[in-house]
Length: 121
Image 1 (cartoon, helix red, strand yellow):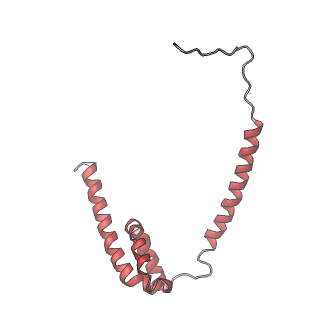
Image 2 (cartoon, rainbow, N blue to C red):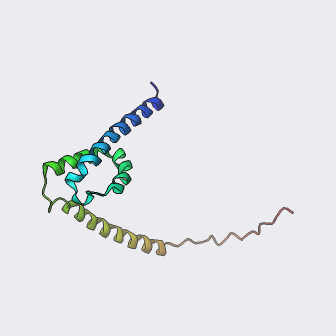
Image 3 (cartoon, rainbow, N blue to C red):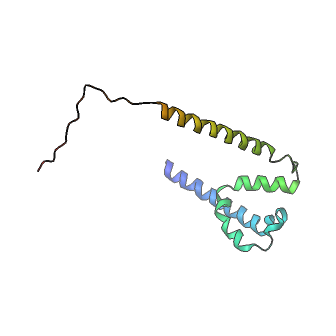
């Protein structure tokens, strides 16, 4: 079996499993873990493509929320801390890029005279 047919087969299996997960999650699971999604049927249609692609993550999060393993207050603290560090690092990087960009000079060689390009008419 060559690479192309095996890749297509893998994508078909991935999409089939994703479609099954989307059907189960949108029919029963989303109401159980998110009370704001009750009655929001247009929203469910909009998230089908995302569930098809990241269905392992959807299953893992569904299981985490159903089992209530993990504390709600501390769940997002590492992510928020990382966002703060990323914002600080990006602002320092932007300042350094602007500083070094403005301080770097490109000198034109003094011994080369400009040449006028003429049209061939």
